[in-house]
Structure formats: C-alpha cells, structure tokens
Amino acid sequence: PLLGSCTRTADTFKPRIVITSPDGGGVSRERSFTVRGYVLDDQGVAQITVDGKAIPIQPGSRKIANFAFQTQLTAERGQYTIRARDKAGNESTLVLPVAVDTTPPAVQVTRFERDGNVVRVTGVATDNNRVAQVSVDGNRLNITPGTRVEFYAETSGNFADIQVMDGAGNVTKLRAGR
Image (cartoon, rainbow, N blue to C red; front, side, top):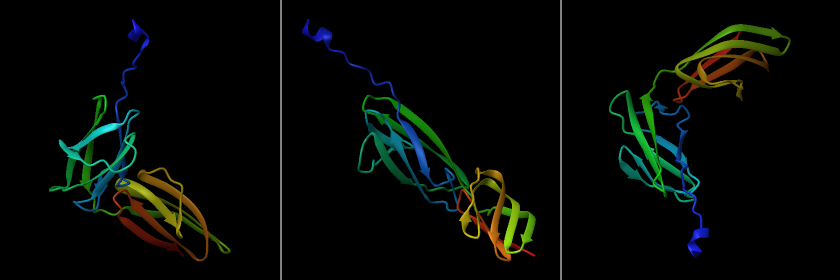
C-alpha cells in the first residue's frame, strides 16, 4: 500500500474575526459608518458575510483577510452578524452590536496646582459608552479606556487644555486654570 504512508492533517482551526474600527467597536456618531476588520485563518478565508450577504475580501493574503462594510442604522441601536468560512468549511460568527452615540464625554478637574511654571492637573473623564482618549496640551495620556477614567498630567504655562474623546469620536474640551 503506497498510500498508507500519506498523512493528511485536518483543518480544525476556526477563522477568527477581529473588528479594528471604529475605535469603540460598533459605536459611532453617525447612523451610517464604515466597519473595518480582518479575519485570521491558518489555511485561508474563503468567504465573509454580513447578515447573510457576501462582502468582498480586500486584495492581499487570504490568511489575514481584510474587510469593510457600511452600516445603515434606522434606529439608535442595532446589530450585524458577521460570519467567516475558511477553505475547509470551518465557520465562525461574531455578532457586532452597533449604536449611535451623539453624547460627548464629560470632564471634571478635581485638582489644579501651579508651582512656578509647572502646572499639575488631576481629573476624571466619564462617558455613557467609553472614554477612548485624554490629552493635556496636545499630549495623549496613557489611560485604560472605560466609562470612568481618572487622569493626571504635568505641563507648563498658566493653564492646561484638556481634551477628552469617546469611542464614537465625540470630543469635549476644557481649559483648566486659576
């Protein structure tokens, strides 16, 4: 038996679906926005569907298959079912909840100190979905995104310009000073 020595390994790896934008997952300020992501599979992605309709896989490697689709929300909330199938027939499903968020984040300064030319500012940023970014005088702070984010920064001058952005892209600006 010549074929007895041939072995074939079965593909049991399910495709992995990853959403890369919008930054907040499925939250945007608009009812229509582009969702981008990729599907990772060791043998290659054969098809990607959104709510049962095939969408194009962007040019490049099928092992990391990039995709994008446009949302068309008719209400404040909805969901899209993304399915990926690899060449062996393995399937994965991701249900992506989407929402329209037009509410900007809030920012509160809890402490402001000035020592000569050095300004120290401490505060809290909150959002109904997710605080994604806090900047002081244009410098992005290292934060852990969440609905409530405490921050601290040192800068120079007479005041501190604070900017907070949520996952949907809504921005609040505040000038802290005495």
